Length: 88
Image 1 (cartoon, one colour):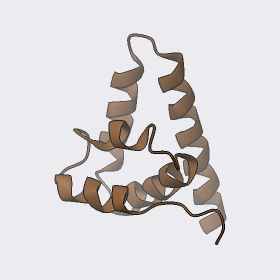
Image 2: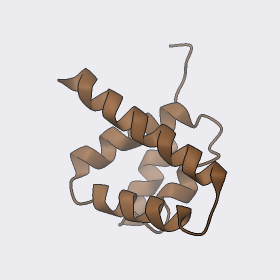
Image 3: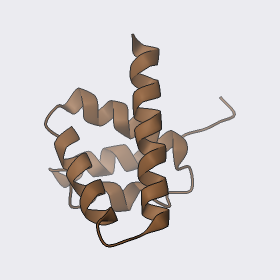
Image 4: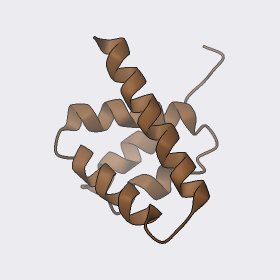
């Protein structure tokens, strides 16, 4: 069950990164709406955040995806303070 959720959010994060890289007029809006929707259930938000930090070790996308879309801002700080260490 957990692995299925991880795959789901891993795929979502990868799609959002591709969307951000492609740009376009609606990319930021779609990403913002998706993250805002995830904030309705903190378990979903944290599962997404886990995969986001795993797929974004250089912090190229994480901050932009979360800031302004996740409240309170301290939740963003908590997520951003967690980094992925692929050596462990």
